[in-house]
Image (cartoon, rainbow, N blue to C red; front, side, top):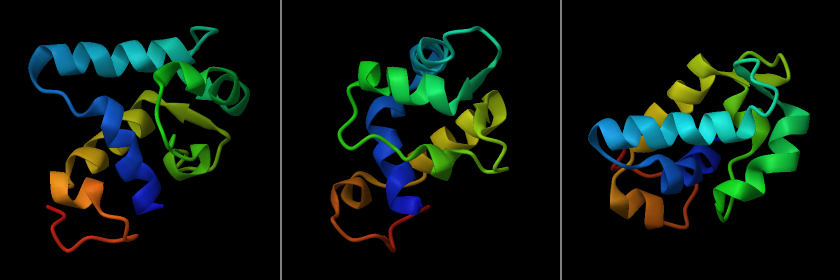
Length: 100
């Protein structure tokens, strides 16, 4: 799960207000019905728009298992992704001792 969320960092690791805007713009890109929640169907149809390789696994971000990613889960995944150093994000191992 951790390695999956680290991949999430490739799109969300920006800084300042621009980062917050980009982060929520990505959320809104995926939340096509405007419900404030990304369903599995929305994720599968639209994750390609984020141009992530590899893209994070939906289940890894859906921490409560309700088959949707709300703003709180999105923010938690983004925070976790930012907690890894550049060296960790580039590592091929499934763990990294450099995590903050």
